[in-house]
Amino acid sequence: MNKFDIARALDDISSYLELSESNRFRALAFERAAHSIRALDAEPADLIASGELVKTPGIGKATAAIIEELARTGKSKYLEELRTQYPAGIFELLRVPKLGLKKIGILHEKLGIGSLDELETAAREGRIAPLKGFGPKTEQYILSGVEKARRRESHFLLPIGVEVGEQIREHLAAIEAIEDAEVSGSVRRRLEIIRNVNIVIATRDQEAVVRALSKFVEKIERIDDDTVKAFARNEIDVWFHFAKPEAFGATFLVTTGTPEFVAAFLERGGKLVRARTEKELFDKAGLAYVDPERRETGDDLKHKRHRRLVEVSDLRGTFHVHTTFSDGRNTVQEMLSSARDRGFEYVGISDHSPAAFYAGGLSVEQLKLQHKEIATHEPDVAPMRVFRGTEADILPDGGIDYDEKTLKKFDFVIASIHSRFQMPKDEMTERMLRALDNPYVTFLGHLTGRKLLSRDGYTIDYEKVFEKAGQRGVMIEINGNPNRLDLDWRHIRRALDLGVRFSINPDAHSVHEYTALISGTWVARKAGLTPKEIFNTKPAEEVAEYLKARRA
Ligand SMILES: [Zn+2]
Ligand SMILES: [Zn+2]
Image 1: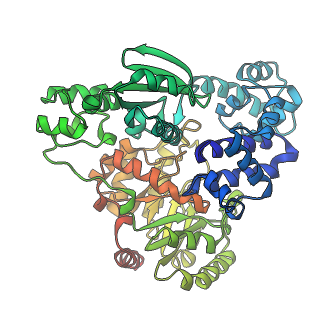
Image 2: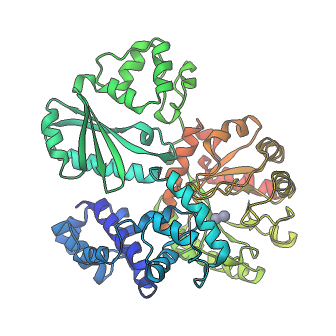
Image 3: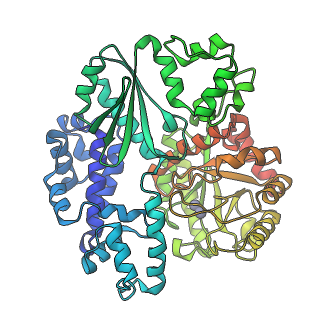
């Protein structure tokens, strides 16, 4: 097992443990271990051999033993045992909006529910409402949620596709008959919701490759001469497309799609001829290369020259970082040193404001303590600059959740909505416009509040909000949390035209979540943004000056 397989098994253990009240604390340990394994630069097997595994932060004695077993045998007795205690379909219940592992555990324990069908029947018969912590409202919500869950059955968030693709490529690298293998399809286009994973394989011996596939995918099924479909990790369809090495380019281009893009490519004189790379095909047709993220339509084929889109390495710093002062899982010191270790020139700390009481929003008193704490650790991370900010709630009336005296003290203010999501469109728009008029607001946070596959965003008049943000010079964040990816890339161009600028923010609640800058960059690239259109590609000096000037 490689590190991804192992991390996945640890995640599974964590999920099973979270189902039962008495194990919830243990679940955290496995979740942490999975995070640590994913973040490793080396393979667990090597660390075991050198005795370093137990020294890795986030990995304890118990988790280390299981990791060793997984690396050695590809199995964990503990996980197998947990599996036998629950029905096979129990995790499909997670697709029901607002139904978390804790509630699922209760439903299973009290009512023996282990599938969507059983959940629906129980809700219809009114057996859920009497349970402690549920009630008639929740029962009703679950009932409508089952319908949604069924529709979402085969939809996945992009990071799952990226991870599965990467895992499979690692397995493929060990197969001798393969000369090259790349992920194509919607995962390569970085579409936020995907249905399957596509892999293009360059080989002269297709049959040998197909035989080897059974080591890491199931239900292998031949579709046509060059295509095989399979099932990975018990959840997701994978399509393998075979090409001779000298024709790899065309297969890569066609299976990356979209069909609309490919049609436009052909219309503009492109030909699907023998070529090892896509680049050759663009060159032969005299077309500028179009990055895969920009291939939802054929629009970019009009461009005379290739425009370099923003890359994660262009980001020199980051805003929207939480700490244990509110609902973050790492301390100020940990968040700062992790930012420094990642090579940032600056980091902007922003915990919640009092209205977000459930997230431990900071009173003015606590803010003082936080600023003291930052000042204590600032010298250790120099020359990285630390900006003191807040993620302040936009109150229902559009006010910002600190008084003016307090707002003045921040280097930057992210204004976000965390309550009353259901407001009618006009009211919600008014609320946002009022917030944008507040002179202390620097960024708008996660503009629509959407949670992909579970919660639609609030409805606003985008045009009005963008126009106002452009006029007031308030930046809109591209929230890179892979569950949010908010603002939607489809809206970004229009906002840009109305004078809005953007910042890619991770909304990090732990040191691991700085990686949300990667997913945030996917969104920016998908919208066609270049480095100069992103605020946090600018050097520290320029950013500091801008923030200072804005406060004045
Ligand atoms: Zn927020
Ligand atoms: Zn946040």
